[in-house]
Length: 331
Image (cartoon, rainbow, N blue to C red; front, side, top):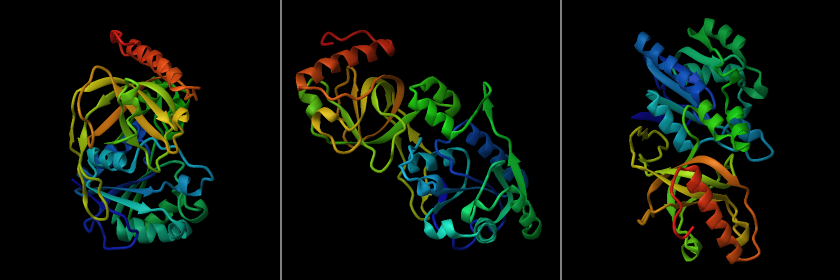
């Protein structure tokens, strides 16, 4: 279990001291994993708590004019931090008040008083505080006064490429799922609970499990060959409640998926619709993780449902081929 707090003010989360990392941690890629492993090791060596500070919404999203595509949900982030061995998480609400906090106040009030920092790990380009005035040099100077040390974690590279959330978003936007998986350290997936839809797919011969994205903006849109894990997860933590790291993992199931606005039927909100091949079961209410294997095409508006159905047959056949499955009789 990992204890999660949301407020910048409050009692010290680590009275005996903490070794902590600060960052956005969107997607929890290989670079993040290496950083968190170092924090966990140093905390064990110093008999302190491994603690992580992150933000929701992400600062970049808060200031952006357009919605920021996310590599993972808040739930994904918390489960990943817990699995990485963090015992405390301070998931700060990034709002106008926090954005206006000076870098010096952030260090003294949040890092030291709230998080009990004795050792802080950040990237070399880490910036914080109002107008991003805080940097590593400021952390080092204030650490001499407040009794903590600052450690700079080297940027991770793979095949000469920097491991970063931006690089992963770019790979996904280009349909390069193998490259994204290499940088992430796992296949890119979107998780969520199956809800009832219009059941149009069932009438067309392609029943789907539907997952709403809510406010989350996906870095991918279109039609895809996918694999689906029937994993379930602990309740999304809020306030001071704990985050569960446990997952019940079921068999991976092949399928074809659509993610977007469904222009042919006049969809108004993004929806992830997944048709599982050769599957007959009730998935309503279950949490699924949809792994994206390959992009088949962009969304398209068809003149009729017959034309849409014909394309769905072609998409299913293409997905089966990519996933190494025999063609169905109906396809």
